[in-house]
Image (cartoon, rainbow, N blue to C red):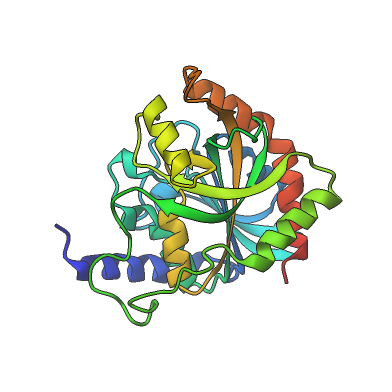
Length: 278
C-alpha cells in the first residue's frame, strides 16, 4: 500500500511543474470521455502537453482516449481540457484516477465539466440522448478520499447533498433548448468497476437501485472535485438502451461510434454552456 504522504508529494510536485509551464490559471476544466476527444479542435489552444510529459500523471491505456492536457480559451473562458481519462478497470486506484482533478483544483480551477459515454438503463431514454447528471451512485467499492485527509485540500467529511451544481444543470438544459438539441434529459449515473459489461440481472438491479445510466468512469473525479470546492456538471452520451428482458449484446465499437456521432451536438452544447458560466 502506498504511503499517504507519497501521494501528497506527487500531487505537489505536479502542481509545481504545471505552475511553471501554464500560460495562465484555468477557471474551467473540461474532461472528455469515450469517443469525444475531437472536441479539443474547437479550442484556441495555447499549450498542449502529453500526459507522458507531466510528472506523476497516469497514462491512458484506452485507444479512444488521446492523453493530452490542453490549455486554451473557449467562449472567452480560460480552460484546461483533459483529452482522455483514466479508469479503475485499467488498474488504477480511484485516487490515481482523480489525480488530474486534484492537481487542477490546486492550480485554481473552480468548475469541472465532465463528459462520458453511458449505457442507458431508463427504458424511456433513446440511444444518442444526452443525459445531464443530477446525481450518482458510486458502486466502485472504493472512494478516492479514503485515507488521511489533507485539510488544506478539503474537509474530512464533504457534503454531497448536491454533487452536481443545480445552477449548472439549469444552464445545461437551457443551453440545449437554445441550441435546439433534442433528447437532452437529466438522470442518475451509476459507476461500476468494469471492464466486463453488465449482465441482464445486473442491468435490472442497477435500474432498481435508481440509476438511469451506467458507466465505468467520472465518479472518482466528481468526488475529488467536490472535496476541493469545485462546482461540477456531468454530461453522458447515452450510447445504447438495453431491456433486461430482451437483452442484446453490447459491443464497445458501437458505443464509441455512437459517442463519436454525437460529438457535433455535444460540442455545440459545451460551447454554449461555457459561454453562460459566470
